[in-house]
Image (cartoon, rainbow, N blue to C red; front, side, top):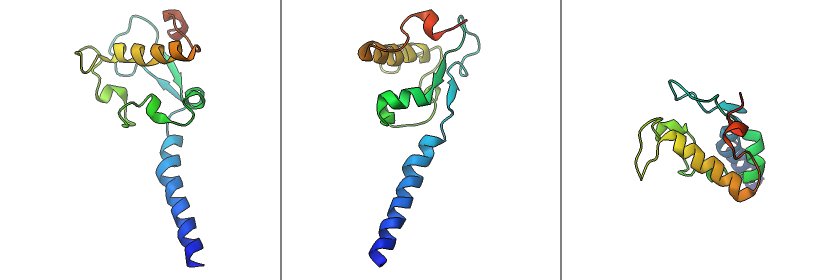
Length: 114
């Protein structure tokens, strides 16, 4: 009986630690929130579509294991070889994955819809 209670408690703890944070993500994210001015319209990123392709592995996009905002590390305008600016990071991460998967938008107008 005690073993069953420990097992149930462990499963509940795992759900709270792993599933609740994933479910707390905004379904559609505005990827331009960190910018003051933009040349093109903001991309709309949908978590649900990308979770399917990543097969539940959030680290595919969140490459550091940190689930904060990309702009927490990547400055919107300034960067270097070790830490590219935010726009370049999005383009490398998003376009690179789309090219590798052979799916998803690749041209400017496909992401930045007017």
